Length: 193
Image (cartoon, rainbow, N blue to C red; front, top):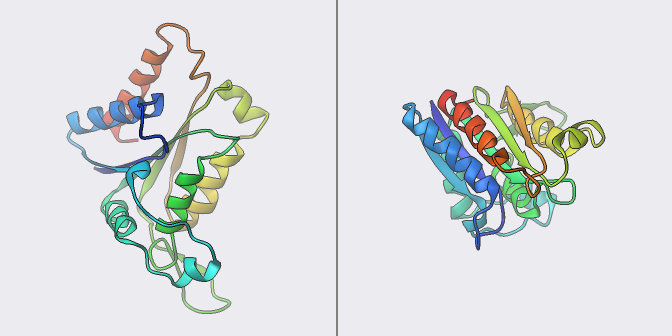
């Protein structure tokens, strides 16, 4: 299977637990014979979209076109990001707005016509790290930001199934707690799920 890991942490100055999770997934996938490419959003240079017209009719810059090639190539997408203010970091959202635009992820056959999903046949896994307990995020906040990414971007583009992994209490993990999550990511990577 061909896997694209989209690393959505915006900090390039220090590795974070999300980087370690992505690395474990990637390493295990490669060891199992899967091909893996990584898109490190924080290292890409691209502008913010500032109008609907720009999103619908504008041309993506070179960095986004290269990322789109990787997404097209992949059978499975793995999106890894930290939960910031209840949502994905703004840089990741800006990247998704640039990459998942009309003509690449979706298309319409004309005014009043339904959208065509251009990324059918791909699956995805969303991996979210957070400071709060994952159970609290899923139950109290109803995982609203993950549901939005799943429904409004990935599934809207034809990506299905989309699964989610919630890693809570990242800063407060007990000794050995991180190792359990790294092992879970290795297991997911081996199966490319």
